[in-house]
Amino acid sequence: MGGRDGNQKRHKGALGAAANAKGHGAVLVTCDKTKERQSVSDALNILNEAADKFFPAKETQEQAEEKEEAGETTDSVQKKLQEEIVALQTQAKSRQTGRFTPLDTGVKGAVLIQFKDDSVSPTALMDKIFEQVESTKDFASRFIMRMIPLEKVGYSSVEAIKELAAPMVKAHVEAFKEEQKAAGTDEQLEFAVEFKRRNCTNLNSMDVINMLVDLVGEDKAKVNLTTPRSVLMVEVFRNTCGFSILTDFHRFKKYNVRSVIDPPVPGQQTAKKGEKDGKTEKKGDAAKTDDSTEKKTDDKKEEAAEVKAEDASKEE
Image (cartoon, rainbow, N blue to C red):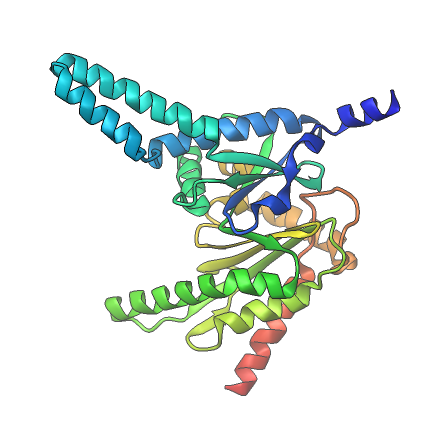
């Protein structure tokens, strides 16, 4: 009886581990801790609907041949009907095999949704979803708080994060330089590092931050913690980590659905932020060992980034 009750308390035990998403993209969904099951269902519906709309599944060779054969043996009306049927079958098959798979992070109120279709970028898909939320002020879930895109998932060690981040940072910096060259401008890439960890005590945040700052380099780049063009996002949950480079992080309120739908009044936001900073400043960078997901301080991150920026300016 006791074991059965334990299984009922945490339904996520039936899900695969978040580490299974290693090497793939994902979305980290944070939600009401008592509504995980409904939030997972909502998230899958939202992702599937958006993916079908903006990134429709490609036909397999077999399905393409079926369409061709149907076209050769039927008239135009039947052909059109057959094409619609095949399209629905393609969509249904992609959902059956799973374009998205929910995984257990080991943290209450946080579920990882793995992207099994590597042709779909988590950042691109989430930006489309949040553009709609921003425009309509509507969202198909009452319990989801944030949906954070993670381009790659790996293990939560400095070396593993560097392996994930290095090629993405290099490509991002090079793309920025090409944009500047094409526009005939010579601006610096202003960036910040957002580091958040949940139920992980064996990873030093300053080590990760300094490593990422070194990857960006000092050539035409500087830290901007207030209005960065690019945010290097690191999300750690137990022994798993996700990484992204986000250019709309602040536009979409850190991918917080409720804040996009009902943005706080600037004056009130500043007051609340001051109160929160005063409370969290004492916590430093101590990792939380409980299951809290949304109230993590970034003070050490800011200190590390500022120290790194100061060191870089001195060397120059």
